[in-house]
Length: 376
Image (cartoon, rainbow, N blue to C red; front, side, top):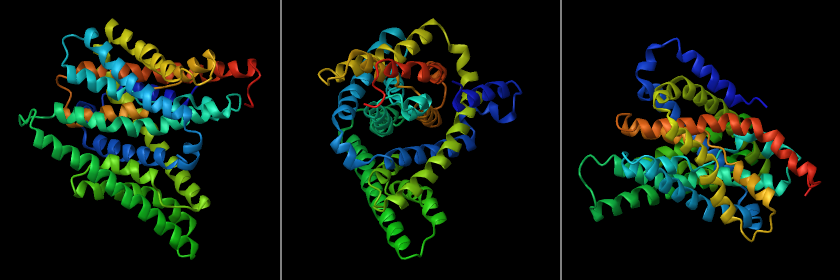
């Protein structure tokens, strides 16, 4: 099955041969920063807003295992394997690389989360995991970026790091909660009184996400965490209005996501290609298999799922837009000098994932039809 990300990445690679002027700036080009940040804000907000918290509480068993056990183990195993693979690299760079490669992107295997042949419980588990793990992975990624970006020699200054944690991980969530709940409540309130039409209800997704980000940044909190929390605690209780906000946000973010994949092929793959060697290839394959699948298998022990289903969930942990956006965020903040290996490994892993998971989504989903479990 040919997917949209495959097409946009290939087009980006082909266009890169024309040597456009902005390519010399690479990821540091001004428009890349704006586009990447705006896309990340929307992706985090929309991913969180699609989560039904009440349903998640009722069906929390499998997602809780994957997010509470599988995700931390994936981060840990990724870092532990990276250190002996790339002994010449800084440990914090390798840890950051492992963290950036930990979130999944269910959209790369769209047939898995939308196809009726896969049991609803499994589809929902994969979708919920993908929707939540990019937000959960964000705080440790921010810590790594802060450590690597410590050019002032702060080092282990306890007071500095306590203040950093307070600003990033307290002010950000508080700002996001206030804007998300308050913004959603106001949309609900004015819509019920006929003061807000369907078009403006849909536009609220973009407004609330950006407002949460901006509000948090004013108080030196983390705007990305704020956008995620705003989506998670969106105060709209009318299902029709919530659906409009979500659907418009998904459509809008999807356009931006595809453009990011185009830039991925246009900018990141060309600068990464010279560093693709056997170590990068082996680690990328391990990232998509052992580093992902073993933690998933361990987290699902005692869940009652059979082996094929466990390995199916383990395999469909594609690395996609979250990893690309976090990589762009890291490059924009840290630059490329000294981080070439990290950029190349993440780019290769995402490239392999786009094609391998896209091509295997339909055939691998047929194991459930063969076992007569499509309606479970």
